[in-house]
Amino acid sequence: MKKLMAMLCLAALCLGLLGGSALAADDDLLAAIQDKGELVIAMEGTWSPWTYHDEDDVLVGYDVEVGRCIAEHLGVEAKFVESEWSGLFAGLDSGRYDLVINGVDITDERSEKYDFTDPYAYDRTALVVREDNIDITSFEDLKGKTTSNSIGSTYMELAEDYGATCEGVESLGETMQMVQAGRVDATLNAESSVADYFNAQPDAPLKIVAYTAEANRIAIPMRKGAETASLMDAVNEAIAAMREDGTLAELSEKYFGADITADPAASPAPAEK
Image (cartoon, rainbow, N blue to C red; front, side, top):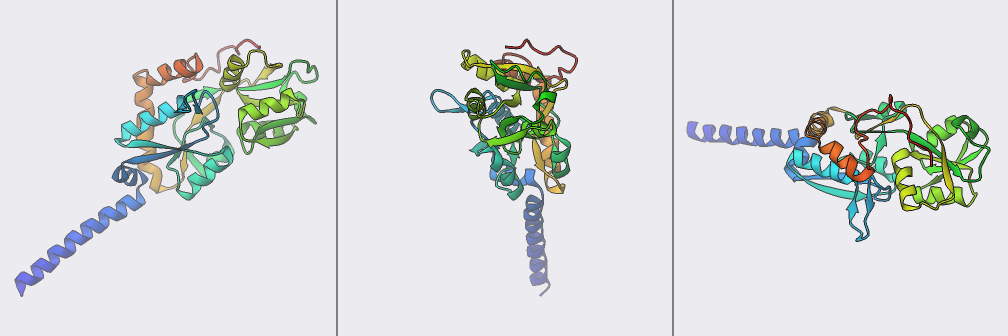
């Protein structure tokens, strides 16, 4: 009888340990990711040079490589899922995605809902108009004008703050086309992406008329709560390691032609097109 009781106690202990391990994985996103061996990363796939498809239709970009490096640091494989901007945060909220890595700016409004990693890039906002536009020369001139921007983006919010009426789109190419066609007066976007667009479309009848004085801080949002605490620490460790060994700067030079991994607030704005 005593032997039977001892065996039952041992079995109960083992089940308790297994149950505790499962519970820990359920309550700890990092543990769940490592158990699964896969980090699910959401991005648009249409925003060069952050995340886009090359001529062979392969998903590439600065954020793609940053995501792979983070996954490697965690000891898992990176799984990339593409979605329109408007669906990225919905997927993060529902738990379909572990991370959104898509050049996301830290804002006060987003910080109320999400926790952000340390910044891994910095980028000013550029104001773009048609080449023949003489009415808009600063952000203040946007009052009463129309812009096109990704729905819910920092750039849409900034344009609305300056009094513009915004039309929502899903890609940088679409917003630039709307400005060229005269359907809207202007657009706002990351200076790095605008520069990349002009490199690819040097004859586009567009011009940059202003930049924000300060750079936006680009970071990775996560769901708030104890569930993501260890994942946050691990991703910050990965970002710090990439910064220290020069990987971030190397990737930035590769995709942007410049190092945007340090805050350029004290640097002069780049020359206008």
